[in-house]
Length: 344
Image 1 (cartoon, rainbow, N blue to C red):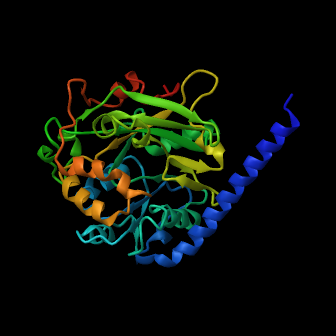
Image 2 (cartoon, helix red, strand yellow; image 1 turned 45 degrees about the vertical axis):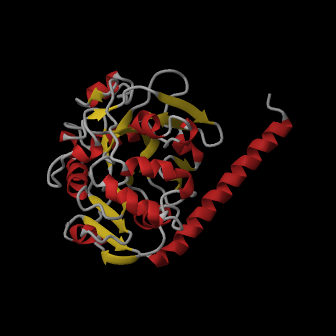
Image 3 (cartoon, rainbow, N blue to C red; image 1 turned 90 degrees about the vertical axis):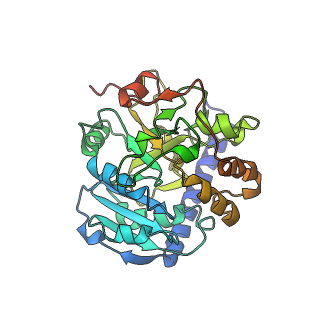
């Protein structure tokens, strides 16, 4: 039997989360004024279409593969926010027939690291759709992805009354220093970024939001060995059957309402999950790090991450004796980094 004081505490916590969710939705609705349509093709969106949302800046080299891959697995329409790109990103996106793009010169940090803008677009266009929310350097794979499109995955999730799907971010890197990675923008980044860390991951459950909190991998090993709690968070929930009442709380690491964060089994077994192959460590990361260190738009307190940027600018070698060469999703499943959860 639950003690009355404990029950009141739970009710109060739930009430505060509802207030937080509503305040973020109101904030996003207000932030819509910062967006100007550059190519609005949302009238092409049909009932049942799978949508992809992303906020980008100077990602011209990554976007051809990003769009082609996710289009190939079943995304029907892309909705991008371009945050002041100068490298042809917006122009590339405007030329894509299944892309809508909005532009803004407003602060990425003040826009809750882009999430305010995406929340508005999800509120306006995502209701009732399965929505994939990604960064431009994230490539989603899942069990059987080469032969089973996203629509097969979402149909299975629907059949099991699941509204969200979790994925582990896996940092991919070259064998040599970061600058040695070769990348043809029209090809795959994984010809060079073909190594990853298969171990050194720490997992815990955050009781307040019921989300997993995973840290580790190459960035934790190479950049945060002395401060592992500051290492990047690797758990994400990128795929959600969207409702206009939903909101991402912290990038795609957690959502409100909190029920959407439970993308894992609590009574034994494994839930169906995927992997986000992270293409951050292309050679462009070196000049980008110099620029972003000066802009100070990517961290709440960017001064704490000066050493991180300094290491990136120094052209690090992330490969080590324990590195594993990527061979495909079955390898990831065998390593426990994704699960088909009974999907045969």
